[in-house]
Length: 397
Ligand code: MLT
Image (cartoon, protein in one colour):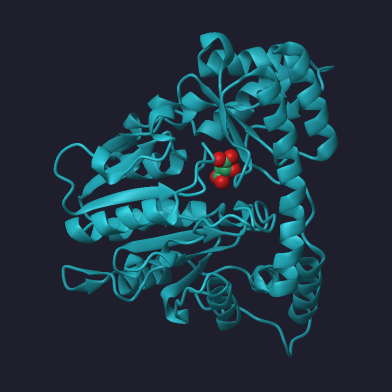
């Protein structure tokens, strides 16, 4: 063909991290059909949707079956009933956001990937290791990335003082509780980031997809807007995937505060415009499900599921303690981020666990250079498989 393509695609890994893992596991399973593989790789939930969510979906399906209550196109930024539910959700943390600052979406991944559409050529600061979508979406659009190393020395929580060079007008990506390391910023640390962003005129893109995993008794921020001044410098992207088991159901939201303005344009107006052109909203049935998940009963049920996963996390963490293997996470986070034993590199350790124990995890190197030598296990499996995986690892490690 004679067309020009987006040459930036030549600069990203040939396949997406979790697609690559799935490919390797499928090929292993084909060659070893009797192997009982346990997947603790991608953070995909295994418990069914909470009862109140299912009931809301059923009721919404009935509405769609009746001409009097049938709905066609949804408002592209979400029905008011979900936006109101998100407003109430933020009030749990004494944070006030208004309905028109909330944009309902089909999950955090899409919004993280798409937000680059409204941004120009800025310095992009991304912690390493990190959820690969921040990196890939910027590389696909031709942006250069400056990495902020995260490691044992800074508790996997890099701070603004560690940024090299001029950071004026940067776009900084943050995720807390962090994927993949499980590390969580304190309010004081986030306040330093907010002060940095305001001083340098930078924008923070804050991914709060794992907020619900923060232990109830922990005094840690669930949203960046708990930090005074954050609405003047941060967009927050959140998702029900992990909180409410919506990995296959798909619903999340992005908050673009009215205060954010650059070059004479409001970022919320730009995002509204972008979404109106390229996105047609989340299905009605799913938005009713999201409303239920965000309600008090739904949140209570979601927390029961999260407690179940956190017991899995505790089983994996205690094995790490027993074996003297360094790890972070497993607390305030569904992920256990461990150091590969005997100095093994992450993909080698992946092959070792798959081959010797038929357990799948995620190689740290897939999250960035600084992830080399580390490995991520998820606690989203069911109890029986997680217990079985722990037993196999106990024998192997
Ligand atoms: C993960 O395992 O890091 C996540 O499940 C991936 C995602 O949310 O896209």
